[in-house]
Length: 239
Length: 46
Image 1: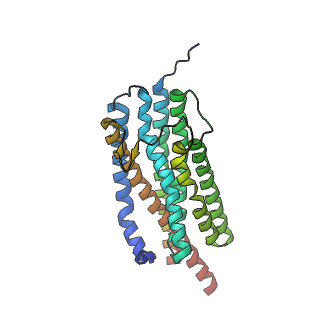
Image 2: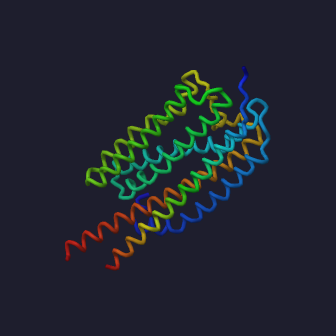
């Protein structure tokens, strides 16, 4: 893992992967969404609103995966002082916040016809909203520390502490009564019918590849900004 | 009085938001990466 700590080696790998990940992700996600919109059957109880599944579930997964990425990278940054770990954590924040917001908005738009309400303050919806606010707080803190030259360790500790919300989101539908359905997909199998499961897996894979490509692009941008800043500072000292 | 909702309005809204938002995210991250790398390359030339 420490081999990737070298920015030059990371950049070589990232340059080779960014565009292919984005392209493959866009193709897979587009195919799954066309299937979801035009070819997937309507569900017996939920009717056509079940098509929202193909966007809502990947968005929920990536909203939580984004913060899991922040937590792992923050841990690596604190323990091993890996130079790229802080950059990786910051790169996960923007796309993670976007998918958490998309999960909340698509869930609300699904809830209105399915439950008769846009929003309920139950465990699942509230903990997901808390995750979105955690993202906002993380981005504000990371922006402030990089502007003011503060310690990145504070941002990393915030990233680690915020991870407590991830199991709360996951188990909220099991621990508390909720309008939200329990998980349909697990390590032990799926309660979902075949026509929905296949499309959902392709959609999730597509959006995950997009997420990976966006994180690599953000890491390259953050690294380039740091390198340009360091170069200009060195020039200023020499001149 | 029973409320009647057209489910397709909700489905369409989610797909439009999801697709437009994802494309905007990809475009923003790609363009900001290119801009930052161009700035770094120009700083190296100075």
